[in-house]
Length: 587
Image (cartoon, rainbow, N blue to C red; front, side):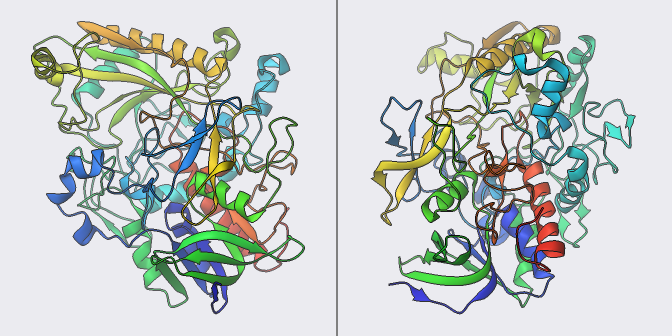
């Protein structure tokens, strides 16, 4: 029997970017706010101090900051004819664990998604007609336009001190920025990171091909910065230890130092770590959440009553909690009815490995998590989809993340995987290899979804979340077309050799790809095709809001943190200024 605790006004599940933003914004209302985080506390001192944080084995290979698959996992299959099996270790994606969530170990790439990404159905129909959309594709709009979300993108960029260069400032296109981006009212708060030599080669080659290169927007601060909350950032020193690591100099924006200290100083906010939420409890009618049940680090369970519940866990965790709690109708792929678990999406990768001449020295060890040059010429609706034969697009880029010794060992295709020749090839190519990659969007399909596994349970007796997912011809076509573009760029750079990486035959959950899972609790304006409305509010349980990339109806080619942060500010604004004054379904 769970111990019933004293009620609070608002309970927030998860303390990453979304949970931290909601807690910060809603604490201004004066209401009591409780944040429940399943992992442990974290702080730059002492957790991320150098040189310990630069332990590549501990953090990059053994996933010190990631979810523990022995306690939190899911089962997977490519299609419904297969029996799903549990992930026994992390592979394709790396969800975070602990205060800050994945916002601690992320690379820092902070995009505004393109206007097309917010309204893909409307814009595709207007330009190409219905014939361009495959029959099994669940293409749908957000119900929020880019222009509506723009002020909230700006607010998140200032919170994080994003380094970048505007390409469309109040309708004026600016060379050197992303001329394909939606109109922005303000430039980035910091200038771009210092470009690497690999980035310079990419920029010169792409401009020669008629493309439009620009620096990736980065949460790695290019200079010392103080954000609007008076939180001070250090300056990035290009150490190359961003992805899978915490930042020892507070140069990479992270919830653990941008938001958590502010929350800890508020008398009406409480943070409980080691609190794993197991279920949201509904009233007898199933129309209102009355409490959440959680287990502490010793496995003791508690019931926490609250007037408002905000699910701000990772994408997969949000959908899992909704299914376990009976919030919304579970999705049925056979009938196409139901909404919770619908439109699960991921991303697809392709590209080229570019081997330069022997006298080229790229100094790959120096880098930063979002140090890359990019082109958007084949993204969104910036090109002719119908001519190329697919919907969606790709983010083509040349990264300089840092050539760490265990993770960066590029060798030409056909090289033995071990032995004297392999070692010789690693030494030979380390300093003269760069990558031209395509990170491709993935649209939603009827038979890609999330549900509860009928066979496997977690340590608390709950059914595991089951993922059913595979790549479709549309995405494979996109990956192959853009792989050819990447090869062309590699050749234009002046490569001695280019190895093409084409579309995968099928999706495998084993090798790491991106931690950019999306969907499962998607937003929209129709309760028949969305789990939450445009304010991230459950259609069925009006005092439950569900935030994060679980709300995206399809996946962009860009990293999700920018729109995740913007949506959190957007929904928090609606709760603070509308819902709390008149609780009920927002319209």
